[in-house]
Length: 314
Image 1 (cartoon, rainbow, N blue to C red):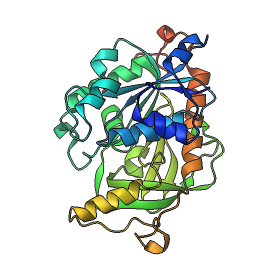
Image 2: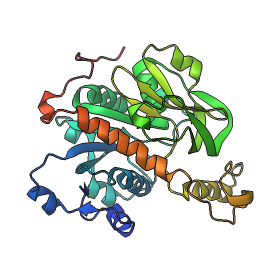
Image 3: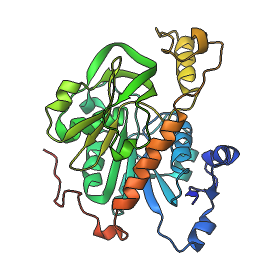
């Protein structure tokens, strides 16, 4: 089945050129099927790039997927036009009475701030609480994953002595995990962050399982065995040139930045990098959608916490 996104979303033209099968809204209405409803809370500054990356991965599924793009109401993006936001995004307040099969929360360029100092932190906490009762499965990325672990379990983040930046080998610790079916034992993963969540802090929380880890950059993917939530601190969804764009932006701004690790051929930034993680990115998101599809109720009004009880933040 194709993915259903707004007909004039900029990502549509990119994905159609790549061969991702797209569905118009008129075609979706004619199909006698309930689509998997996925909400994406996009906190990244370059929203169009992130929309394209995530809808590309969701659109490869044999399931019909309907995407709703969300933004916080308590912060106005500065790097995406107001026209684009008004045309394609909805605030959480507009959808809080609805239910979804899945929610993706992206990273955000605020990781050096204390959580409580982030402009939209109060709203984000409300979204996290709402999602536990109104979304079947949640997938958190980078700072979004750190923030969710902190909110739900009090797990802190720690500053790194220098930015973890580049492509690093990661070991799959539980190949039987539904999220990692088909993964190689060692996977190259794009990393771009100034902070980390440490193994020791995660191990203090009963029910949290580390699924993927790197000797160089630490924990990558964590699963909450009770709720089924996934926390991915790195960026399998990145395009081939995303790290190059970050590097060149920082160089142009005069920031102290090292070459991304194991990224440019022969460490030469004049050479085009090769994408070595694409297949695992598609596989991870297809595994997640498959798990959502098998577990979510047909009627979302029947949705309950996976543990069968109301969840409340401590």
